[in-house]
Image (tube, rainbow, N blue to C red; front, side, top):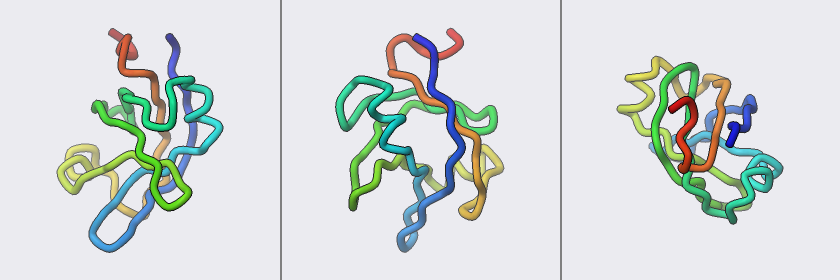
Length: 90
């Protein structure tokens, strides 16, 4: 399955940072409201699960991931998601 690409902004609440996923992207994945995904952010890839929170869909993006990817809280990353099986590009 091909991935879904989109541009978004980082979402910050206190010390927590996440990547906001548009509702139409979650719907396009056709895997429910908490789909497991493989995320690529500016070339950095990791597995995660979309989480509905406060009327938004978010992917967690920890301080370690921000450091490894070179992306900071105020960034606007280019992101692609695909259902966790099969992996994108593998």
